[in-house]
Length: 151
Image (cartoon, rainbow, N blue to C red; front, side, top):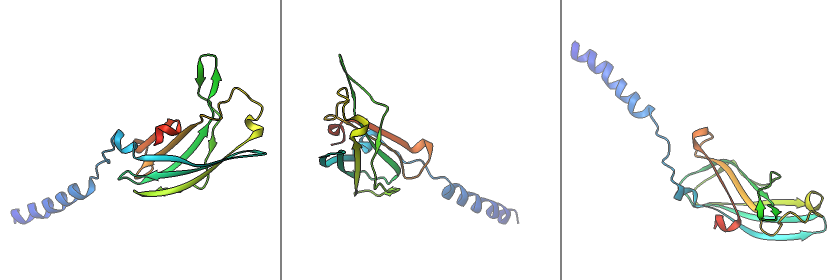
C-alpha cells in the first residue's frame, strides 16, 4: 500500500517537473549577428526618399513582434549625434521564422528634413527592436547602427 501511494505521488510529480519547466532560449550575441538588414533600393522623389529593405532572419530563433526604424544622425562640429526622430518601416510581420526574409518599406518625407542641412541623409541609422521566440521582457533585443553593422 505504501509503495502504491509513493508511486501515485512520485510519477505525477516527476511528470510535472519534467514537462513544466521550459528554459529560456540561450541567445548569444553571435545569434543576434545573424539578423541582417540590407538596403535593396533607395529612390529620391519630389516629396521625399523611399527605401526598400530586406530583413533576413538567419538565426535559429523566431523573431516575434519586431519594429524596424531608420533615423538620420545630426551633424555636429565634432562629428554627429543620434536623432530622436525615427521613421518606422512598413510591411513588417509579427513572426519571422529562421531563414525567412521580409521586404520592408520606409518613406522619409521632405517636409520632415528637406531644408535641414544638419541631417546626414546619406549615412542613416537602422534600428530593430523585437523579441526572441515570444513577447516577454527577458527575450527583448535591440540592434542599432549603420547599414554596415547589419551585414
